[in-house]
Length: 306
Image (tube, rainbow, N blue to C red; front, side, top):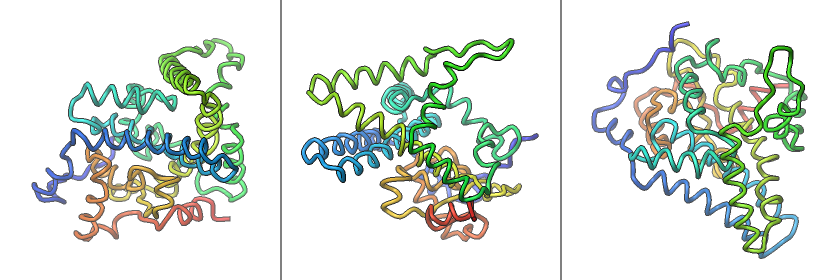
């Protein structure tokens, strides 16, 4: 099928507005990455100073959300929007965002640009994430239970490595580039925590959040972006924007990822300018053409109605 239709930004924004929206920053992207890691360190410190079930649970939620945040900032790097210096963009996107959570910037970029080119069409590599919806509420809960119990993490990261290959199929390579970088970064992180006397933090407050809450909110984010959008030929109807509240932004949708319709319309806008893009689109009267929901609770009711 042909690539999806695009909107010429000159038909929506003034030259001054567009220049402001697409301007790259030498510090904003780096500040977002630093913010993610500072919150992770703060969550760890909270448990170290006040160890109790409440602080442990809170830390798991915050760390899992910032792990998703790192993946989101890797996504900005894939669009070349994290930093105007290409070398800085690639290094930070790969080693401080992608590698820690088991992603690969280069392979993700190739995959993700196909998603933008063929959004919600048969060639879209992300179609499998939205096509099954709506589903039953029971089915959604079964998926969430698998996420929270680490089953999804195991299935996606390791299970295929031990599966017997089908006739004519090669056995999965254990140490591909993505896993090499994942293990390298996490080995350094474990060594640093061990030297500091807190080796247990790596397992309890880094791996556990990645295997549980990160998986849940990754699923919720995927549902929020395209499930039940029923994309039309109108580019304003290719993705959903979810008006996340402050708690949702802290624990489910960091770094403005909930402005996904705006991102699909104008994919070169850095994530920190998406709220401004949303405001301008509303002021210019484009809201009725867009798919906008009030919070992730509303989205889940649509995706799993009963």
